[in-house]
Length: 448
Ligand code: HSE
Image 1 (cartoon, rainbow, N blue to C red):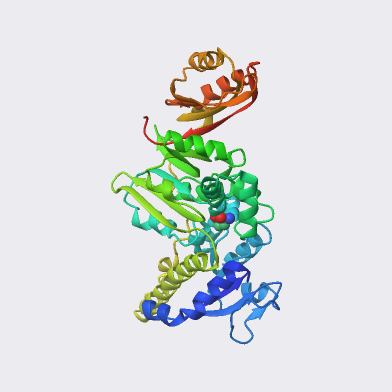
Image 2: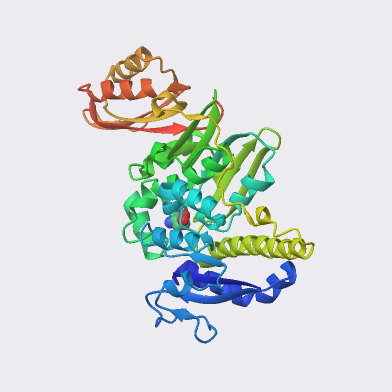
C-alpha cells in the first residue's frame, strides 16, 4: 500500500479525491497494490465538495500531511507560488515524493525544486501541469524519447481558445467573448494569465525543457496575448485561408530554439486549426516518428485529476518495486540497493547546449492590419516601406470605400524577419496616411 496526502481541496483536489476513491478498485486491479488517500489538508474543511470522504481525513494543517511519517507522496494542489513552494520543499526535505499540477511554480522555480528533489532522492510528478488530461509529459519523456524533437506547437490554454472560438463562431468582439467565458467559469475574474499568454508560456517552458533538454526558461519565452485581436481580423484571416489560435511554439532551427507564445494564423485545413472551445491540442514533430497530434481537455477537476492520479500511480509503482528490491537484496545479505530508490526526480538528466533564439531573429510570414486613410497612393507608400525592409507582399485586401476615413488595409507577406518587420511597422506608423497603430499576426504553415 502507498499512502498519499493531498494539500489543496479545490477543484483539482476534489477531482483527484473523487477518482482515487471512485476508481480505487479499478486502479488497484491494474497495478496490484492499493493507493490509500490518507489525509487532505485545506484551510476550508467545512465546505461541501459533493464527495463522501472517509472519517477524519480532513485537516486544516498542511503539516499533518507534510510531517506524517506514513505518507509517501504529497500531492500539492493549491496552485500559486507561496505557500505552495514551501510545502513542496518541506515535503522533499522530509523525503516524500511530490505530485503537483502547479505550472506557474514549476516554470518559474522548477530548477530549484527539481535539484532539491534530486539531492533528496525523491521524485516530482507534474503530468497535470500541462494540458490537463492529455498525458503529454509522458509522451515526450517516454513515448517519443527516441526522437530529436523538431517542433512542438500547442493550444495549451483552454480559456483563450474558448474566447477565440466564440469570436469566430458568433462574430463577437474580444470583450464580449471574455465576459461569456467568465460567466461559464472558463475564465477567472482576473483573466490576465490566460489572455496575455502567460499561462501558455508557463506550460511551454515545461514542454521545451523536456523536448530540448534545456533548463526551464520561462523568462526567455516571447509572450503576446489575444487582447488586440478583433472579430474583423478573424474574418480577414478566414478569407485568406487561416484560423487564429493562441499558439505556444517551440522549434529547433540552426541549433537554436525558438520559444514563443502569440496569436498565430494557421491554415484552416490543419488538424490543430480545428481544435475549438476549451479543448487543448499539442502537435509534436519528431525526426523519427514524424507528425503526431494529441487532443483533449486541458483543464477541469476530472481531466486534471486523471493526470494527477497517473503520477501518483507511477511513483507508487516505483516505491513498491524499490521496496521489493530492497527486501530481496537484504535477504541475499548484500545490503539494500539504495540506487534503486533513486527515482526519476530530474526534469532532464543532462542539459543540452542549445541556445534560445532572440525574437528579433525569428522568421515568419506576417498578417498586417494597417489603419490607413482611403486615398490614392496609400498602398504604394506602405508597400514602398515594406520593400525597403525586404518584406515581400503575398496578398492584399481592402474592403469598403470611405473617402477621407481610415479603413483596414490587410497585407499578407512572404517569409520575413521579425527585426525588419518591427522597423518597417514603426516607420509606417509614423506616416500621416496611417491613423492608428498597425496590428500584426505571425503566420505558420507553408508559403502560399
Ligand atoms: N486557464 C487554464 C486553461 C487552466 O484554460 O488552460 C488550465 O491550466
